[in-house]
Length: 65
Image (tube, rainbow, N blue to C red; front, side, top):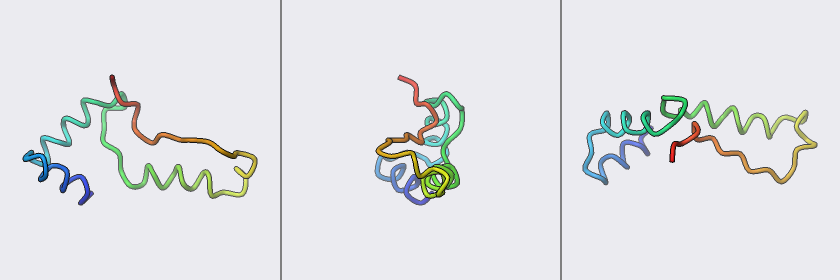
């Protein structure tokens, strides 16, 4: 996303280099997409999840370290 591009710029990195670094740092081996967050939001927004309360969900691809 543009936010990730801004992070790369702020840190003096090429966007592609930052993406590759992020891939290496997650167990799933890829970077997150807006759709990943949307799926998590959709779970909590669905009325079938109404019994789920007070939870914290990390949408982070299982970071290493």
